[in-house]
Length: 398
View 1 (cartoon, rainbow, N blue to C red):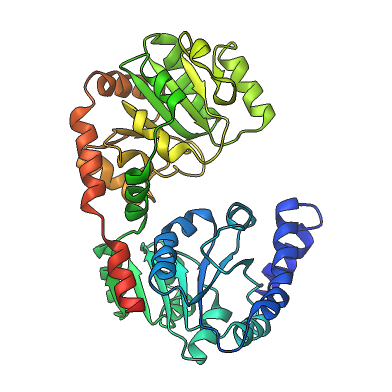
View 2 (spheres, rainbow, N blue to C red):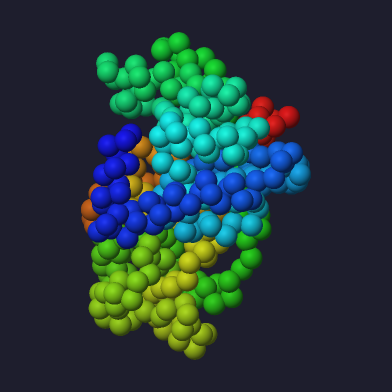
């Protein structure tokens, strides 16, 4: 750990993201000491980044609703998570996690004195887990998932595996995780599922229409909504668009830089409309609407005949559940093996993995012609997994 954090400080001299992390974590203890008041009750939630935050979000909202007197600290390790959620209004403080050395962990907990600590999915910092255990502070991990390839279960993994015993309880997503832990004598485990299902269903119920996107979608009976796309995803989709003039594409890129929008403009030969410049007049004759605003994606899948979720040709697919909840068939690239929900969508007939353009074209041709069966399978799968928030909250806070 000392070597890791030392190297981070060196990297921060050249890397802006690392610099934000180093500077941000250094301020946390001082900020917390100024905010914390004697007699207050605090609960600590920790997420690596924004994806994990979304899994803890339902628990935070439930706690704020049912126990408003409790103060909530939310920490991130990743600068991207912190920057996106630093103004999240339902907690009392958002901060970087101080580097996990024994001294900093001790100082942090001496000031915060949390009633409970909740880690989301990943993040097993030895200094914090040992310090929490030493103070007998109930500590939980939620929405966790375990695989035999993880360090805990290698022949050299005993030091890592011992950290799992520091948790009061581990809430895992599936039976295979529970069974794997049981093989190693770890039985403080509950199978509770994934709170993201509850989150996307909540968004689904509260979604409001977007008039211009709705008008664009009404121009065709074959609409693809592609979310969190990267250049390799976009290259396939744009080719399909050119070969199928009756199809309409709502494209929500992962990156919204001027450079990337310029590249899209060239790839589409200028034949697209930016949402920021859209009107009913210029949406009638275009095949592609590029959404150049953040925060809309989860509500735009409602207009999809078929949804495409990006990232599968890179580091990994983005959130397929945001699309599936609208009873839309979901298509994605091959890097999806570590995503339980993507595997289950394929097994239930609501999700489809593609490896190249030929597979994409064949898949979209089939689904756009007859989306009903696959769409129902996707929506039914999400419905079947609801309830994780109730299970976890009931055991931790009641």
